[in-house]
Image 1 (cartoon, rainbow, N blue to C red):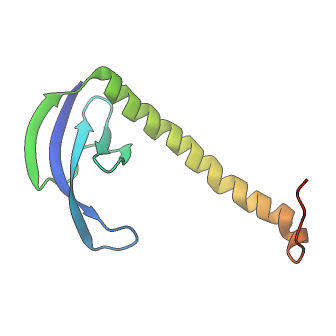
Image 2: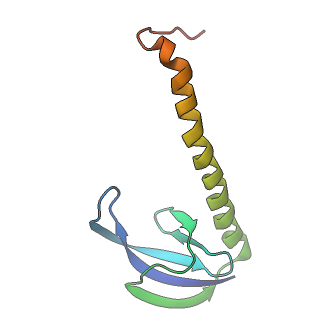
Image 3: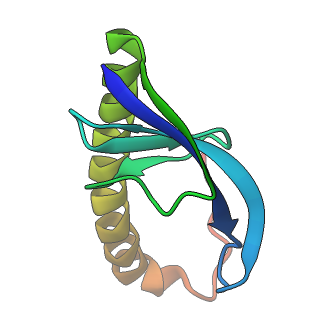
Length: 102
């Protein structure tokens, strides 16, 4: 699949400060992006590039793996934010106890 390869400045987590320069691949057909730090996400277009290295073909298997990873992570994150508040409501009765697990 056709992909744009570029470098961009990665923001430091939890801040607006610029961090390191990272290499990214934006896969046009699937509208997903992956970077060398193991990050992957949906993106309608490539992010702002410091350096643009051109358009290349990446293996379809890799492109699909990135999309599958992003989609599955999204489902996990949506469910994860639901389960912990539900657990906290049920576990409030044990707040001051040290429960023993058998």
